[in-house]
View 1 (cartoon, helix red, strand yellow):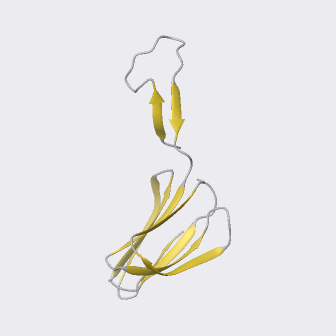
View 2: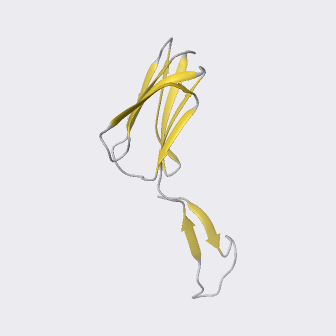
View 3: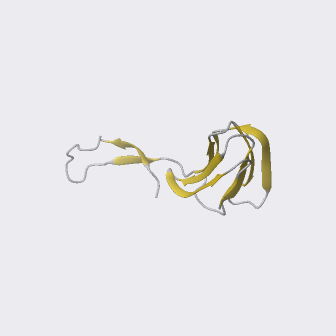
Length: 112
């Protein structure tokens, strides 16, 4: 489920039978993202493969945090301090696996 970041020889090249083709995979990753029409948010998250809760107060949005893993429990939420719409996204190996949106003054959104 990882993406190919490089290939040798290049894609579309005709190779002889038995020739070596080398592919390089992007490392596994999990990314949490918060986007909003406001400018600041308070974000609370659980790092993948952990149950430790962390929080960042008054963070500028958009906000992103990533980890070098594609497995484990994933959960986070955000509350906007300004604006009226907030969206959270979770990407695993570049693929969007969870998204949610909340609207209203001081909206709270949860992904996980």
